[in-house]
Length: 392
Length: 224
Image 1: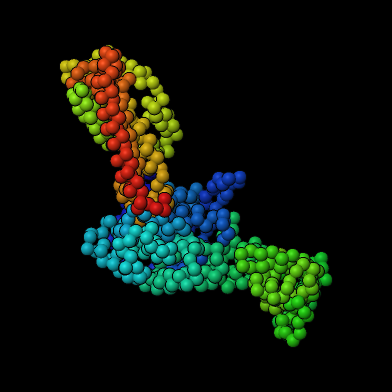
Image 2: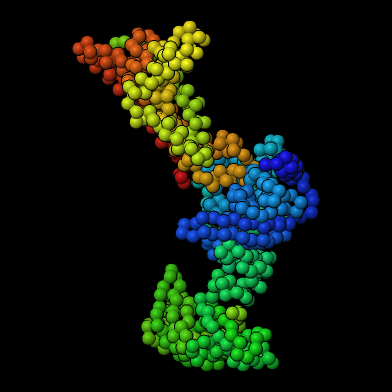
């Protein structure tokens, strides 16, 4: 490492000392990251190659497992070294392959909440939270730990060990331990994956409240659609190590422009289609599904007659009836036959052949009261706006 | 009963266990966390005393500590006598002989610490040595206790190495196991039995009390 880089690391150390961070009053900083990293994964080479920015506030990193989300977080935190790239928080260079700067993980002011939480099992809740405050002198350490314990409503647990508290409480402790150091960037790796909805909502409220006061960039990794909508200001969709889409949750997930994104966000039914006619005045158009006579009324899209598209429909958005329904507002009613029923946990997936094979989600109760069985006649009801169009 | 041999053996075993507790920790740390490509060679060297016949080890130690080796000559110039057939020589030999019995459990318990905890420690601003003392060491207590006790017990019972480099000088290098051997050679079976039984009892009591302690030490780690 050259002399210049060493010098640079010195000045960074001064800026990033927790004592100075504690009294920080500078404007909120944006994370700029360009990261390339190749990994050998069993059976195949994997390349993470992303370039993005994250302003203060919550940015969701969304993607299937294996998309490279955790590797990206590890590069940002300094736990893994990228092959190439540049990671900067405002003026502060954390990593730059060109000038060969690489700030070690323990010097970066980054809060990281691991999926496994990684609380220290031999320390009490209070000691876990004070763990990262060693540079600060005692009385101040105590008052900071006290205030974060209060913010996350875990004061009563301070003398317990991680093994003696519930899963939701452990999540809070892990969050508090990362935040008590006043980080410049917060990385959350599916921190709420194992939580029930009520606990999740509470913790998210606490996190949002904390962030109102601190305004730092927060990267929040998840593969849950609910969390994307509950939290998101911005979403970055990672796929196979690359940024596949970005924007607001609504832009990215409700109107996917790429089929790969669509599959990621859960369209069980995807069909090739072509535009048969457009009804400009009603804001709809009619599309024919390829290799069948099925026609669907869909929202209007700027696409010429005859142009080919793809239609995505969620299995949970389709209604199923055993008699031909009448008097409905839904515009698409397709007759067909049940060809199979499979149960996953408490959801039944029915495959219905109506010219094309559609997957429909039902509850156990619905299956039983409709007395569904293979070969039974069925009608599918699909609202116009449940048909999501993508370009091919 | 040769109480002198007993006291000597206890002194030797305590000293060796203490030395190994101090020396074994950095060696085990290095073996666990070093990324040096030739590390496997060092690992093999540390483990050698487990598989090597004590006479082989004792023979080379005798040569190395004797007045014809550079180390032996240096020691002789310094102190006026050779290392071989002295208590110090016995301590050196026993430390080498019992090294794997300390290093192996130490290294195993260091390696068993969840790497995520080490990553968490560094993201909380604590660097290598701090992490070692605040996370790795406290979580390795059972392994540390096991290593110290094993090296103590192993030194208590050693015979071949002691005989090769220490000889059989009463009060200096005659340990219990050599005493027993002497009694048997002299067809003094009753005396041999008394000494052997006492050694057996001591070793059993030490080991079982340590394992009992260790069992309690596991309780704070129920999710491991």
